[in-house]
Length: 452
Image 1 (cartoon, helix red, strand yellow):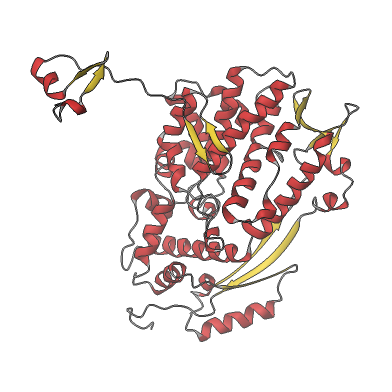
Image 2: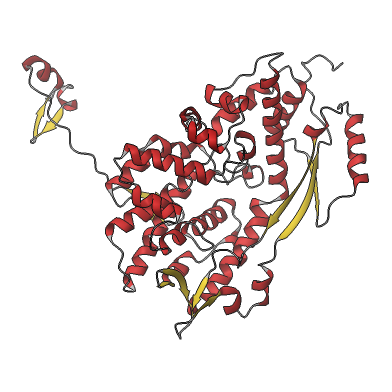
């Protein structure tokens, strides 16, 4: 009968060498089998997807990319759609998968794309969101001073390029749009890119908003090139129309849902108050991770990011969990504004929100301010419990990187001109909605002394 130690020994040349024999005979450790880097993943949206190269596998395994497991794709949308718990990690892998399909389609139509270009394009789309911070877009205004996540992604890509000995150079050119073949950048970032195709399909799947589903397979099959510029065959016009309509629906029904805006506004006020208290340096100390504290104590600009490596390193250590851990502890903090905001978020005791197509009358704001004062809120505290803003959306911007339609004659025209639907032209107009959020009933903590 085999001894227990032998059952857990190394396998080398079909011979089992138990651990205790290795140390008794002073023999060198046999080499372990090499890691299989051609992984197949089961994705709920597309089924089985493949990580096609060893370099892509190593990038997925890197700590910068693994952090995306801990950043939700839709920020606070789970307060509206309980199933919206998917992450930036899911989305990036899905976009990489669609990029592979798009390149396969273009190759099938006779366009030469080298293996290096294919891998670089998949790297560029895999890492396009690696610069997102906690809660994706929600807290960009709180952590950074006008630093878009694309800029952080680019800085991290340069750092990874250094770590991988320059093997990401072509991917960086594609990401930046400096590569000589512009369609690669269009596949990564345009009005018809693999990023949008994945997040619309994925977000509609996890939220259950069926109207947001797009025919990504059909659109990808209709892709073509004219002078290395991306276009769509004329028989794909209906799919593009559905894509633009779905995008408009998803923005108003999910991304800019009034309750999502309300919750995100409350979260921003939590961070505003925490930043104020940290910089005031008085009263009860605030619990937070060192990386989190660095961004609350300092105004971090793009120049600071580029010149001081500590900011980029600290940023790679931040995720949603840093913020949630603080919110749970801050709910019992001695500062009554901070504790009330955190407790209301944890209990889903949300602000009231109204929106309109025109700016609100000043009289309404004065009336709401008076209602808040009646709850014991001081003038200094009003801005935390009364938030005013606006949301904008345009499903298609013909002034930007256009969606080109290739007619049977070979002529290339804009989708707004190719479509016979009048609503496509209507989708080019920017829609603006104004909103006000305010606390109807503030949950003051009962364990704190009354406010003087």
